[in-house]
Image 1 (spheres, one colour):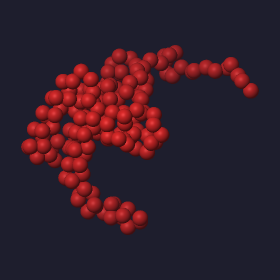
Image 2: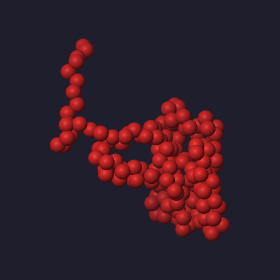
Image 3: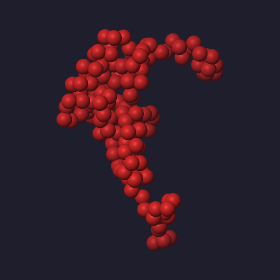
Image 4: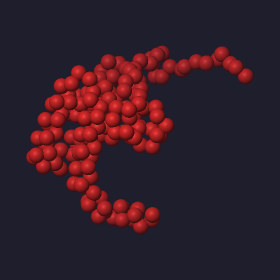
Length: 156
């Protein structure tokens, strides 16, 4: 049975909602490594709040990696139901775990990527994967030695 009784109820004191629809990759900040990342959402949320907006809609952020190039940037592929995309990882959160050489290399790569008018998907993704590996190598032993991990591992 088809009905025409569709309505949107107001939320709070406003009789309407305003917002922004945005792909995370477009939220490029100084520390974004050439592509927007999850931590950039905080700045977007602050902007939306200051602007009186109350809705943020994102394009899908799931991992679509198959080819490790621009073809993986399509967020609606069937593979995308499994995990968050590593290209949105904020590798600066782990800054203190990098060597001085790794820090310098990251800053140089980011200067080059952030200066581009358009996103270089392959280079940004390669940089994120390179530093994800470094992060893993620097922290895996700590997690594997933890009591919680050991319990989880024993349950497998």
